[in-house]
Figure 1 (tube, rainbow, N blue to C red):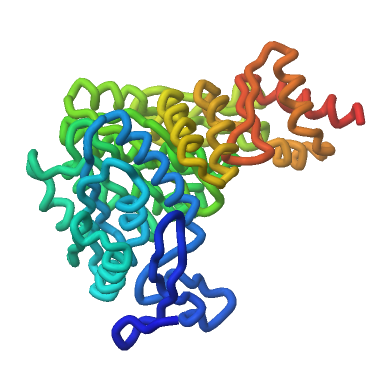
Figure 2 (spheres, rainbow, N blue to C red):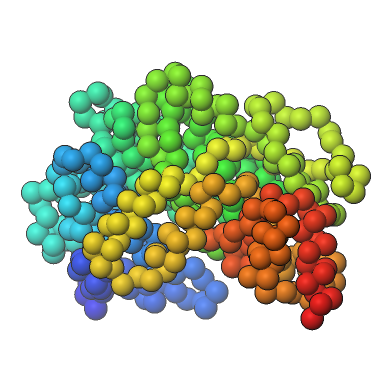
Length: 403
């Protein structure tokens, strides 16, 4: 344990290939229910190591497509662990500029830069995140990669990030405000993301689509579009990587991917409505109940197979030991071309008082009946399929009664 200055209690850890000095979180927790990272004077979340691991892999895959050195900006750096790891672990990084509004965070970040002898490649700024990115909005100053990983919503930083990325740049976004995005606080979702959320079993997918939808409209104001390369979600956050593409034509194409998801809570039926303007009130074609609406949100792809393969290639080349990354990439291979939304077997069985059949049996039965059916990384009991809700429920019922 060390002391940085006179107020911050720290410890030295190893993450990836990097030695980092971070806040000693237990020193700031007064009750077991408190969220330790938010209590420390400088933000550091050890649980997000997996997020940072994937960042290293995705950024390396992206850099390899350019064939040149890249520049990186991180406007919300905290203690600097992500930027330092990028500078140490990603090949072809010429310059990293990190920033945090907290002077304590900047001190700790500077300590980590010195610890890893990165002074020639990494610089640190101490100002508002949007002001920081605005300083790099001029054509020859823009970054190749910007990572927005806030404690909460990335929405307040989207406009500045878009302007600070060059054509062909990569933008990574994390959102941890899952309550608004998953329908617990729908008004907050409308305020932050400009769309309505629903508390459905596939709310984590809706969350990413709401975030990408918000980005679509924000980028369109600048005549900027993008291509989604990679997305994933967990219990407490969602993450997406998009390739910035300048031009009104591309932004118009993105807007055409906007629309709504209509959901029937009584029978689990769901359908997609394309277009920016909300559909009129509609009744469920299967049970006649009034359908709920989520959106406007992104209806396009959340994953790009070529980029997934490139990430898999670099994962094997780097010989990383994180098996969960390989499992995630493997699951996403089948999700790339799969239908929107997914059914969660447990939820459907609970609604209709059925015993829960094995996931493999459900997928096999759906395929035997001629439907597409694949697993989803969002939920271990989730199935993406083009089968109607009535057919899906019937299959669960038949498998349940055959036990």
